[in-house]
Image 1 (cartoon, rainbow, N blue to C red):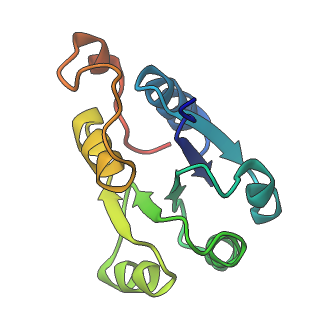
Image 2 (image 1 turned 135 degrees about the vertical axis):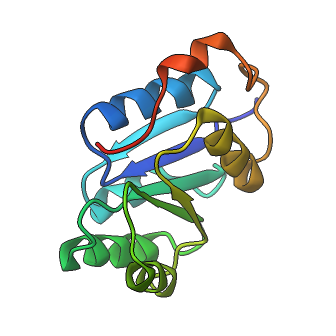
Length: 141
């Protein structure tokens, strides 16, 4: 039996979280919302492939502490950062914090899907060009 690929949604809030969860489910992934690094290990097991999508909202010390804690809890799981705005300084800080990739907001469902597939492989679910995807827009939360 094939296990569902899990995508951890960290530090993502509001309508962006809801829309992103709906889209990931439509694509056949299992979105898991977490609020703390301590909960992440409990939802992952060694035999599941996973990806973490981490949204920076303020680039605050607390956000970096949460990301660092997540990296310590599950060091082998790739992290993709996203934010509606980022400075050059913050870009370097995010990379030093250990993220594998960065997705600039606003981003299209196609961009998100291609990035996910880079780390988790292709899903057999909904086509990238589906008209249903028009309702998904990912910018500021």
